[in-house]
Image (cartoon, rainbow, N blue to C red; front, side, top):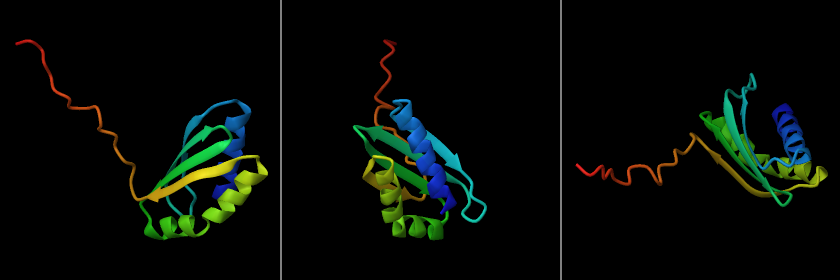
Length: 102
């Protein structure tokens, strides 16, 4: 898939510049918008993909082995691959209470 080639290209760019985190927004015409979050640490990539299209999510999971192979060609291993329907909002530290002394 063309999006996979683009993703691996971005990963190569990241690792060449010693960057460890990236957020990539792709909009392939046949798949709709996708948000891809990538973390690279010690030549291991963790990838999270968010897509509202259930068919796209199924295809991503079905072809994750190809992504693993493509990363291997770049000297990276796929440590984690997660596909979901919407970005998770991190709310862990929000709303811990407001003690303004009043």
